[in-house]
Each structure stands twice: as structure tokens, then as C-alpha cells.
Length: 337
Ligand code: ASP
Image 1 (cartoon, helix red, strand yellow):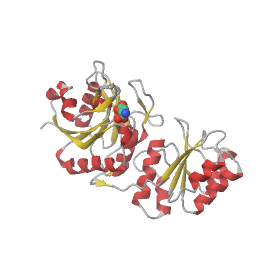
Image 2: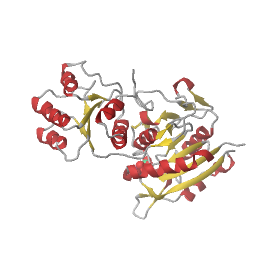
Image 3: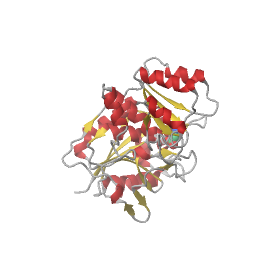
Image 4: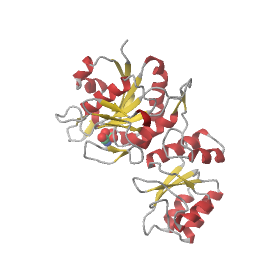
């Protein structure tokens, strides 16, 4: 029996057509599949479906993540793998979110898209869809949410969009790619997660979006920091710090953080650097952060940090449990010991 894959179409450049004013708009699924006739002769069982509303991924919301996860849960037993066609702009957020939502996953969920619409002669979409399908149908059965783009398969919650114009638009700086597509597909088995024996798929659907991301810059003002920290209903803040997790050492800054922590706001330190990890206490400029109760985001991408924090705050009421899980690797999203 041939392996079966379900394509879930959500939108993005891959399926866009040019409107009269020249701007790109999402298009229906039939048009996407017609543009890749090779799919009919690839030897896998392929079915497809689309979200009720096809979107530019700039309009992505947790509600849409739930729609995608619901489809995967509903069709889980019927298929060997899933390919999610998605806009590139927020693909790394969706891949990260799905990784936290789909606990006990034992089948591949591969997100892909393209930089040029499929209807264009030089589109990168055809190769991306075909390889993503081959990976989703492969007996290797990667039990992870991944992103396939321009010859590389990445762990979804380690990926980040790095280019608005190159075909190799994604990178995973802190974890090597899981597979490389050349004449053959070379899987790096030792880097791929092992499926949990006997685990069943469990879908987590709740996100708490009452969080903020505060990116530090030289000259950042007290009013801005205080305004963010005092936002009503705030449950968590991700501070994008410098280097190995360093921040300014001004007293007003610490006071704003200390006051927020006192109100049970969780503060997570991630670095603005693309590669490497937060190491609190390496410099004096991060010692006080730890003392106040700021947590280390280790080598999390910002996409993984945002989605993990929203997922944990939406799933658990106990602040201490959320804190503990934030500093624990749940789906291979960060280094951990
Ligand atoms: N704006 C598009 C989207 O993310 C860009 C793309 O697909 O490459 O939906």
C-alpha cells in the first residue's frame, strides 16, 4: 500500500495570483495543485484540503493554528504524513506553535511555501512541494513538525525566516538541518527526534496572548519599558537582550522588571543574536536579571519563545509550572541539560 499524505492549504505566496493593481492575493487550492502536475504521478496517495479562509500568513492567529491542528487530529489515522502549504512570513511561528500543540506526534508534519507564486516560471514552489511530500510520505516517518525550504528540512521550532528575497529563506542557527535534499534525500537520523513509544496524539488548543516582546536598543526610554511592563492583564514578557543575555544596568530598568515580577508577570530573556545562547551570570550586566527572577530562554528563537509562552500560559494556571516548563525543552526547541 502506498503511503498517504494530506496537503493542507492555508495560503501564502505559493498560491497567490496577481490582482489588477499588481499586488499578490491568495488563490484557491485547485489552482495550486494544477500548477504541479507531477503530483499526479508521484506514487503516493495524495489528498488535499484548505482552510475556510485562505490567508496571507501576515494575518495568522492562534485561532488559525487551532484550525490546522484540528484537521491534523481529525485525519491523523488516515494519513502517514501531512504537508502544510503556508506563507513564509509567519511560517516559523506556525511551525513552533504546532510543535507545542501536537504532543505525542508520531508522524511528519512538514510546512512549506515559496518565495515566488507557483504560476511563475521560476517559482521555487514546485520543488518545495514535491520534496515536502516525499519527506511526509517517507518510511523514515519523522515524528516532528518541520519546515522544508530550498533543499533543507529544519526542525520547525528551531527555524527562522532570514530572507525576503532569496530562495533559501529559512535557517536554523542553533540546530543542524534534519535532512538535505540533493539527488537523494539524506536524513540525519541521529538529529531527528524519536517517537514516544505508545504515545497518542494529544492536541493543546489554548493560547494566552497577553504577552509582550520588548527588544532592547541603546537609548531605550524608561516610559516605553514602564508602559509595556504595566500593560493591564500582562502575563509574560520576552526581553530580546544583547549577546549572551545582557541588558542595561540602570536602576529604573530593574525596578520596572522587579515590579512586574512582583505582579506575577513572567519575564524570559532571549538573545537578539541569531546564533548562540543566553548565559545569565556570564557578565555583570545579566547577574541582576537572574536575581530579579528573569528566566533564561537559552537558545530559543523568538518565534519559539513567543509561541511557547502563549501555549504554556494558555495551558497551565500555576505560574511556577509555567516557569519550570519554559526553562525545559519540550519538543527539542532549545538546548537543555
Ligand atoms: N506575505 C506572504 C505570506 O506570508 C509571503 C510568502 O508567502 O512568502 O503569506
